[in-house]
Length: 189
Image 1 (spheres, rainbow, N blue to C red):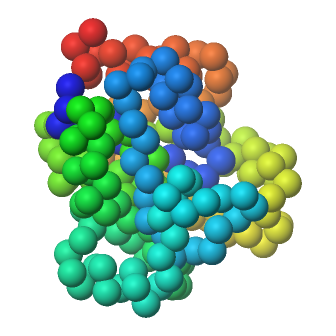
Image 2 (cartoon, rainbow, N blue to C red):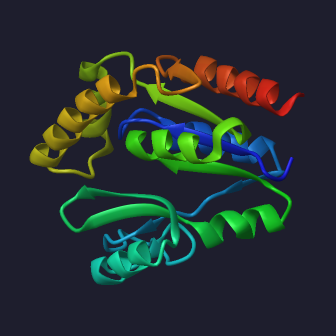
């Protein structure tokens, strides 16, 4: 199964991390791809565990060196990307790569990996539900929440027709079951 990748994308607050963590828990052959970012660590985040933390200047240098499979400047000086050496590390372990990326990153990864990749878009039932979920987290200001909601609305329009599958995360148990079925079919199980 090495050489395969599964890409999960979603607007912030759609449940992507919950789905990914569920699948990682039941598939020992899966390994999570650690993204690089230029943002500062939050809370107890550690370099090389949740993200590879790289300042914006060094991120730009790595872009110039063609060190990324994909990258994006999500906000001014806030970069996210997938290092080529991270992909190779996971494949060298004989594992299937699981990506947790934003919508533009998911489209870029699907283009890069082609038929070796399954791309899944996770969406909320509606924007009102998304706003409620983001507010319920208690981690962002109301301005940050509105920025995320606006970005989500744009992402959903951009993503249309660009993913292999779309999962509406309305009832979590159903979403997890459907994610298992989609992944198992892709892997030929």
